[in-house]
Amino acid sequence: MLDSVIFYFFAGIAVISAALVITRRNAIHSAVFLITTLLATAGIFLQLRAEFLFITQIILYAGGIMILFLFVIMHVWLDVPLPQFRSRTQKWIALLVALAVGLEAGFVLWLARKLPGQGLLIANPAPADKLPPNTEELARSLFGSYLLPFEIASILLLVAMVGAVIMAKKRTEA
Amino acid sequence: MMPIGHYLFLSLALFLIGCIGVITRRNVIIVLMSIELILNAVNINLVAFSRYFGDVAGQVFALFILADAAAEAAVGLGIILAFFRNRETVLADEMDLLKW
Image (cartoon, rainbow over all chains, first blue to last red; front, side, top):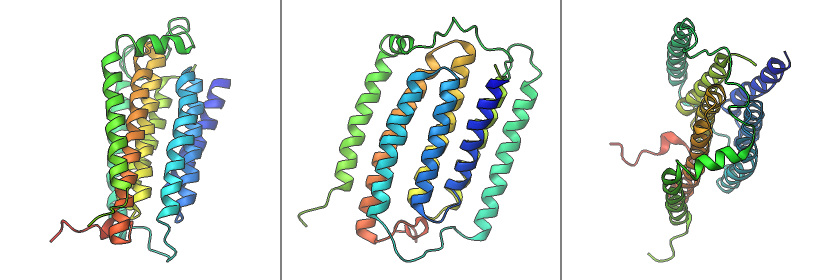
């Protein structure tokens, strides 16, 4: 009971503020609502016993990436009021496509409901002691069996950092 | 504990909202934010399955997606800054240098 109350609380906040992200005219408002969505998602991570991801989501996503977004929004601030949405036909096409994808995925989930015990809609989670609620297990897995992907991710971050600096810096000569 | 379907439908809803944002908005920064929404929806799926299968691999991959989102945001915002310096705009339909 308490579980579902917590879930619907965070899920409601996440969905409503996600809808506000894509409908606000002001980009700053969108960024603030995106932060709200990310924090609500962090709450859902905590409910799913992913404590490390919970705190990483808050520090890295809501704290780091969104600050980057806010800096860029303030840098490219445009005072003139602009039409923020594309043409009306494109909006309808977007809604139609989203509705089609949503119906399709929902239908698949609905079908998978009938597979007993092994379908997508597993009624009962794994026993709590199988996934102990701590960060050690995650670290053991990350630096054990997933060491190579971890190193590749670090190289990806390095490349992205160099690329971002080169993209954003001012050309001095020529 | 709730059935996993709730988490999957939440993830689906966030994913669709992100898709609509990518298609309809003109401001490239908000398009990037919608992409962050999509990545976030994927993370919910991974963490939910990690919890329900009792396997920590889902959380490891969610962590990789987090790193990926950071890299994508940094490079994307760098491109937006460079473009804004050249063309004085951040609207997607005015980025038509490759169009004829």
